[in-house]
Length: 222
Image (cartoon, rainbow, N blue to C red; front, top):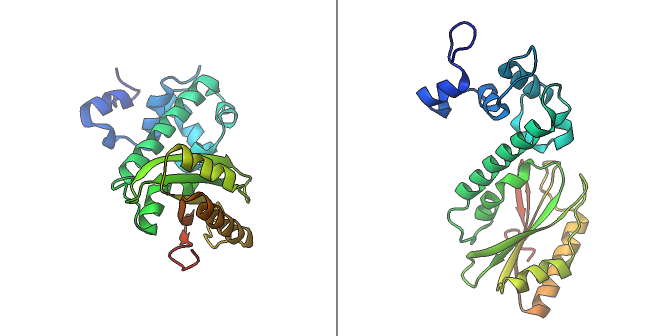
């Protein structure tokens, strides 16, 4: 099957030369599968990417309704596209998890790398055994664009269920600046005190962002 001008369609190009040979526009076109009346799927893919400034990060952060609102996309294509993008995130995360022994703040930052692209704050609790190996994790809450909500009760409920010896709490700063706020310092102290009572160590509290990270332990505040 050929496109106008005799060039191969994205699916045929992928079979012939592999996915690495395709542009982002062509890869999105494969996920969309079909265009709309009077518009080829590659044109629809181009329209969709232009809507989000050509950024896969912005496209990934967009809601289903926003993606579906692009003329010719609709909800079914939006769901398929979001699923494909989520698989990409999870693959990236799986690759970044090696090794899973989180004995340094740099490793924690790499482990949670996908969080730096989010537009809202989330809080992740990573449960560790006595050798600092990851044995489980849980995302506790999604905050507003400039505030997350961390409660010791929720953090240590997760740890106790996982029979963890220690936890690392990670949250992101969408602003790009990982500098802790006054509230970040207060909650870190509360988490440390709660952990001492329960016998579960707060190994670290790490703030991640596009411009790096802040580790309370590394900075001598834990």
